[in-house]
Image (cartoon, rainbow, N blue to C red):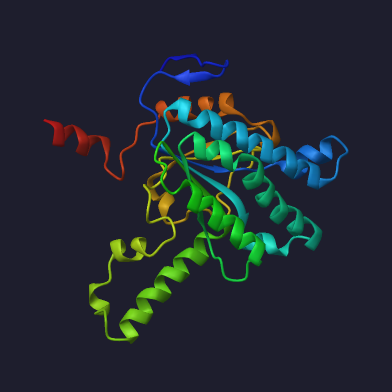
Length: 255
């Protein structure tokens, strides 16, 4: 698929883009280390990368974006780093919520909220409440999120319904499990991108990634921007998605 220059320079694929892209924003620490800076400054630079990437995503034709902000495993990091990551969520909302609201971006935060500090819960609530009327672009922020934890939470809800006599266990199916996930409101991702050159999923969108395409980009997250996202979309456009069907089956079905 051909690409053309975007309004501000990045390459924009000219074919149909994926509807939903999910991003594993990796490389803040290595970016800082390479420059002899504290990890905290790498995370701050990562916030700026998120701002410019989200701002350019709608221009690339996307409708949904999910970003991995803080995982359930990130609590194992040094307390000072955890505190900084929490502070950066607040900073992102404080400095960018007005623009997101004006630009038609709806913010939705997925992940466990139990145990989060009251000030973090207030920031999440404010971002969701002020952008609830928007529909131009959906930004999902995975915060205190883990794919396994989300699956466990959904299974727990079904188990409770069975125990209370509200659900026949023989009727449980994939749709019911999926409906209990924190991502149930939106479409499954068509494309999952991980930056920094690492090639693993890290407990991100485990259920939802069943038929997603993956692109791994060798760029540290603080250096990321719309031009890198456009390159990922271009690579996606070269893929043939079969959703479990074989090429022979497709040919027979068509003819």
